[in-house]
Length: 120
Image (cartoon, rainbow, N blue to C red; front, top):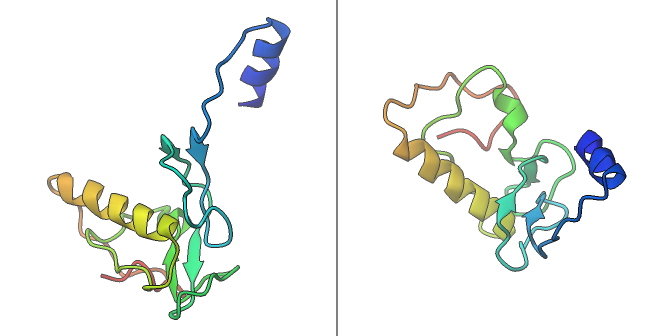
């Protein structure tokens, strides 16, 4: 990204910037996803206590790609706590929709220790 930005600047390439093109939601910011962004940049884990309070470390409910770097998540993810932000609910729904649409989704091994949100 930085290389392209620097090269485009040097070549004076003009770009149009869309408002709300991309958001990078987490449990701590962009939790309500104002508007309807074109891209959800899934960078940060979404971590919540069972009461829906955002956590800065692995929470009771966790949606984080880093838990499954060497295996598939289960085909159906446990829902976020009722008080979790719109970002958690939206990404949870998108994950479940994508996995259910893929035929032959592999069986998942048990979740990593300390990871509770992926449990089916």
